[in-house]
Each structure stands twice: as structure tokens, then as C-alpha cells.
Image 1 (cartoon, rainbow, N blue to C red):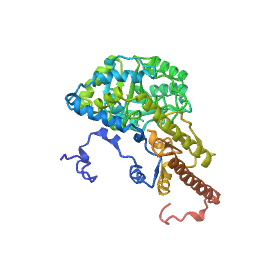
Image 2: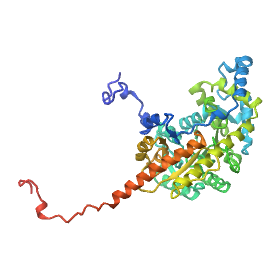
Image 3: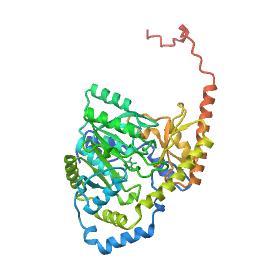
Image 4: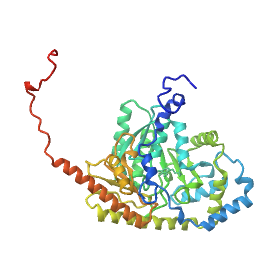
Length: 437
Ligand SMILES: Cc1ncc(COP(=O)(O)O)c(C=O)c1O
């Protein structure tokens, strides 16, 4: 045990031993509430869990059986720090659907794309370095960047994704403050948490800005193939190889339990990613990689993505029509893919303060502040339509509307009560003890 001055200020006897950077790893204030929200009677619109029950169980069982029976020598053994060559080859086919041409050597398999984010933070961030990220941004990316003592500065978004002019201004402001920008982190397709998509024109503009400013782009694309009406524009990596690190994952198009994702990076960065991957996990899980590879070789994986699209489209429709029915005066985004709707509340409401009341009314959501590093998003929330069935979604929105309307009438009741009349101070108010001036 160390003799650190912090010792004894916390129930954890090792409190004083942690590295300074762990200060960024504080548990969310709403975590305890989410434990309650996972009870079956609560309609949770909070999490981003894919609906894995829509997967072909038979085919997956066969893939697992074949993995054990026929490929145990590989699947149960340590593997390459870059990932299995056969799977990397198959990943090229997946990325081709979004216009990306790359070589097998360009791909590094990671333990989900979350781990790729962690490796990138480790490779690029010194304390105080800035990551520009959309405002709002994926909550656990913010956590990772902060855990390496990076600072997240948001570039504002609108219904068309990150606003290029706002991005230019944000870069200029950060640089004028003398701070170092390490990369732009963006989720251009079916954004988490806003659900919106960056148009092709904006993608080109953002790339141009970053090229001119010498800023690397980290393009995180877990949802791109899960479109409802029209496909998302091609990935930014499809036109820019040198300035973009692309992240993909099988978590949303297959299953997050596999923990198989990947990064495609320019040559020198890729070499460092492999070394960092080896230092972290020796090799990404060979069992999961083999099962995914077997699945891709034998199942109609594109057909399965179509199935997921149908499931999520129906749920998106249920959420949008329920919002229209129960909360017509509010505004929300209309996602053309992915898992999320971003709901904006009247400015007088605070979604985090309202959450305990919502959970009591048996509905949960994620408060907007979770997606900002700077306290923004107070009067907004993320609603996920990926997991609950359409009926539950409708019931959840009905309950949410009750909570919001209840809160609004409370606010208007308070504003009706006459404000306290404050008259100018008079001498008789000066009830100071006689011995003081
Ligand atoms: C934008 C974004 N990036 C990364 C991840 C992490 O995904 P994975 O399961 O591949 O680690 C998620 C998961 O929800 C996500 O929404």
C-alpha cells in the first residue's frame, strides 16, 4: 500500500494508487438507474443492443460445431496480432459494399471496434491532446479518449451530420488556443446517438477540410449497412486512403458477443496498430474470428443483413409514429438506418433530472448529456429502437409522453406562481449585530 495523501478518502484501500488518467473513468451517474431499467417491466429505450434473436441459430450452431470439429488447431490456438488472413480477406468483401477497396494487409482485426478506438487513443493521445468529435458523440468513444487524458472538443451537428463550417471554426478556435488536434472522430452513417447521416457532398467537404488542415480522420462505421430506405453514401475511406482510419465491426450485422471488429489504416499506422494489438491481447480472439469466418463462408450473410434491416425499419417506424401520436409538438431526427432517434425537449426540461421519474413510470432512455464531454445535451435524449418489439416501443413512447407532459405542466405551474417581489433594501433591513459597521 502506498502512503499517498489520498489514502483513506475512499472505501477503496487502493484509491491512492491509481494512475492520474483513471480520473476519466468515473462511472456514469445514471448507471444505477440503468440497473433498475433492465427489469422486464421497464421498456428500455436506453441501450444499443442488437436484436440477436433475428439471427439464424441453426447456421450459427453449425458454424460453431465446424469450428470445434474441423478447425480447432487454429480456433483454439493463439493467432496473428493482425488477425486471421482468411477473415481479413472476407472483410474486404463486406467493406466493398460501401465502396472501400483495400488489400488484406491493410486490415487489422480487433476485439470489436471499441478496442480499435482504445488502440488509437493509446497510439495518438498525449495528455491534453484534442480529439474533435461530433457534438453529440458516441459515449464510449468519449470515455476512451478521456481515459488517455485526451480532450474532446465537439463540432456541432445538424440534421445533416457534422456541419463543415462549424468544423472549420472549431479547428480554428482550438488551434488559436495553442492546443494540438490529433484526429477527427466521426460516425458519418446513421450516427450514434443522433441517427443522422452525412451526405456525400459533406463527406467530401469534411475530407477536404481535414486534408488542408493536416488532420487525420477516424471514420467509425458500425451501422452503415443497416439502412432502411436508401443506402448511406459510400464510406469516406472509399476516396481517401492516406488520411482516414476506418473502423468496422460484426457487432451490428452479426453479433456483438463475437467481439470481432477491424481497422483499416494507412501502412505506417497499421504497423503500429498491430504492435499495440499484440501488446494488449497478443492476438484478437481466434475462436470468434473462426466462427465469423465460417458464418461468412456458409451463410447468406447479405440476406441476414436484409433481415436485420426489415426488423429495425419496422421498429423505427413504430417509434416515429408513436412520437407523432404522443409528442407532436417536440422535434426528433428521422433516421434512415441504424438504431437511434434523437429527441429534443423544450429548453426548460432537463432529461437527466427527469430520468428517475421516467424509470418510475417504467420507461428508460439515455440523457443527452451522456453524449457530450462539455455538459451539452441537457434538453435532449437518445431513444433506441433496436431491441424492444414495436408494441413495446409504442408503449414506451406513450409512457415517456406522460412523463414529459407531467414535467411540462409542473414547470408551467411553477412559472404561474407570482415571482417573489424584491423591494429595494431599506435601513430597517439592516439587522446586523450592533458591533459590526
Ligand atoms: C459508434 C460506435 N462505435 C463503436 C461501437 C463499439 O462496437 P463494438 O461492439 O464493435 O466494439 C459502438 C457500439 O455501440 C458504436 O455505436
